[in-house]
Image (tube, rainbow, N blue to C red):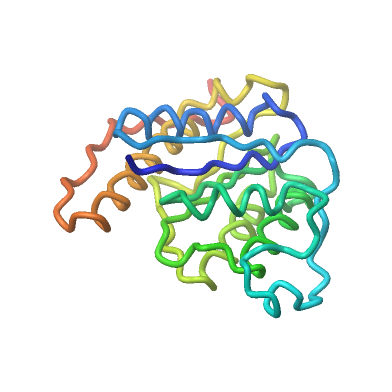
Length: 207
């Protein structure tokens, strides 16, 4: 069975980022795709120091083994797709999730040809910038980007508020169906096109 790894880059284990990723995970499961959500936790994740030791050793792991980076690399190596999610901090993703992505890719995680997607969750603004930042590394390592009906953005502040963003959750489901289709298409070459839901719009100001 194919598998997608979802990484929750929020310091809140069961917050809105987790809820958005879970919406995608449930849809992937319905499409016959196994999923695993990994929470990066609250402990520091080192940034890449460009020492080059990973390239010199050529073992696909970061020389620093005192955080979760190498554990996540091992999970990513056996996955068929990747989704990373983060809340928005000052218009950017969390530092920990960026550090993790940088080190995984620089160390040589097996990612070429694997579909990837990013998810940004915010209270109000900065989501599109954070979303773009999360996606950019994937475009440099030959990971096909999975699209949706909108940018993969959901809105909420207090835990559970994302549940009120009907359009955001639908965007997660559409993304997940597209990822399932892409994984199957890459494997078989004849996967049926994903079915679309009737569009749900969620506006911030209502009469």
